[in-house]
Image (cartoon, rainbow, N blue to C red; front, side, top):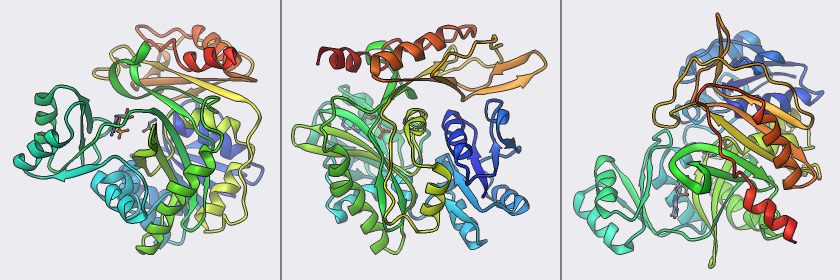
Length: 414
Ligand code: AMP
Ligand code: GLY
């Protein structure tokens, strides 16, 4: 099978390695890719928001499958165009990607599917906004209805800040604050059947102890030793399967990766948000643990043939730590030289924001590398990830030192 993977981050580096490890994949192309991916796949220049360029490349290469990493081309409808051209694609149609593209749409589908989520109001006027803020009280949760590149959600006790964010949005979802641990749980869907992956936890704040600004994600681990044993089955039954059934009933089946961001509250599991693509950096811990060959799996999803497939996992634990550029997330500094670093056993260094210039390998994104350690438990996986990242030098860069720390202490105590 010949595959084109679209994207350039740590997520695509992990997906690319997973695809390439499947003997069914005999040619892997990535666009645009990055220097890490270029070590094992053929990279092609591409602007990911240019749908026509994606179609042209897929046709030119005559690929059997396109896997789309980021949300922007999906929300722009690239999957519809690929399918119309007769090319199998792992990624939802424009209509189905609205589960990520519009918070209000996701709420409507959840309501129709009976999927538990925070109570909410969708507002378009000043008056509605004021009423919604007062209906729920602090802490306020204010979400831009549309895609906002990770800057759409404000959670604050400051009513003025909440109001200003809401007024700056064209349409805004204001919802109840959920109390509970957060879990990311991904489903791989062919439109009719959805397979739940094992859960992961993502660390969104920039600094240790969950301080600092929200980011795209500073680290992750999987599996979660503290999660209820029935979490996968339960999420499949109450959330993923009803969503897939509802999308199919609406005539807009969801084919691709349905990312459920969950809060485990005292009243049960609630959906915080859906994304229509693999999460980053959760993918960097899930893919190295997945035993099921990835290329065949995503091809079966893309060709509506997942029935009867069971996901298999390695009996290991993975922890990933993001190396971020100085100034990330507000004003990341680029162009700094990455020193050579040794390979550490049982670790993987995924490139996220790197490029080559005349001096060598340099930083070119806010999240520069993602370093994953694999071990028999969280302590071992953490030690390996942190040992590997400590050998990497990049001027001004930083990383969180507490990824999976509490969970690993709790695991040892058990
Ligand atoms: P999102 O962009 O929807 O993932 O939101 C970013 C972060 O805001 C989430 O990871 C949560 O930590 C927080 N958040 C979003 N919605 C809620 C909510 N209803 N209650 C509490 N926290 C929330
Ligand atoms: N890890 C969060 C995201 O991918 O949106």
